[in-house]
Length: 357
Figure (cartoon, rainbow, N blue to C red):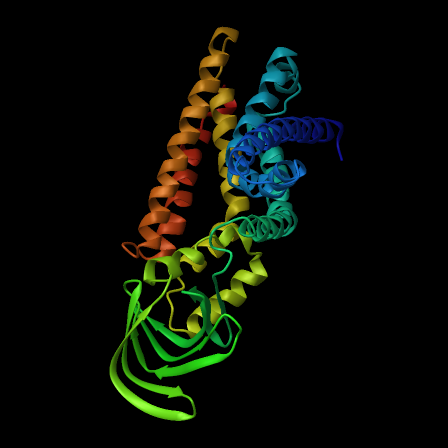
């Protein structure tokens, strides 16, 4: 590697890690405060807030990577400006576009490591975080999972435990469903089979039910079944996709399809993670363009503020398209790629005269 390339790569990586360490420290401190508040009325070991803060911090940092890259790029160029190294590069014939190419390549490489290594780590830690947190939650008696055998729910109402298995979900209806209810000593009370259960509210409406109780089978046109779950709650239980690695997301997508359950949210998360390296490169280039338009020392702070402002705007634009995709108001691929293509075009236009700066 040529000396100037090594210098630029090392400088950018150092800036990145400095910003990364500052951000994760801030997130960790804020998480501790949040967990201390959560455990304030619970008798637990004082280590729990620290432990849970460590578990959840990487998942939050993953969402902050675009901001981290933008700020890291700004500090990288500030160092070049302050030491007049940018002028040395210019007089040596090294064009600005070459510097941007080098740090963009580094950003892409770090982005690949982010989705293959860091995201796997953060999703697993987030999964453990949710498991531990659930032990202290009011919902610890209840459980809902989706696997290749369908939707499984453990529900407890009036000291009676119901195990519910459904092979299909269609909007607010469960189809091909078995409900087995036990008393507090886990003695069988009854079993119910139905092909149509309305779960819109907490009082389920079970249509055309077959009831098995005390070795006797009977039919019922309609049964009202109280549950802690309804359609919205079941959907919300599977909304924390950041606790799933890419491989688990792909498996979950297959399970959703077998249940006839919408895969939009899972697809959004998969594509979001897969395109993350490109998004990080875009943020790096945008930050570079802003900083290379800095002429005088007095305007550097202003340029940093402008960069942060643009990062917030980009965040909300990206979030807007994600919401439009999740609610299926836009096709999935349109909602994913529109922000990336739009920002790439802006970068290309702004890069035209960058060597003259």
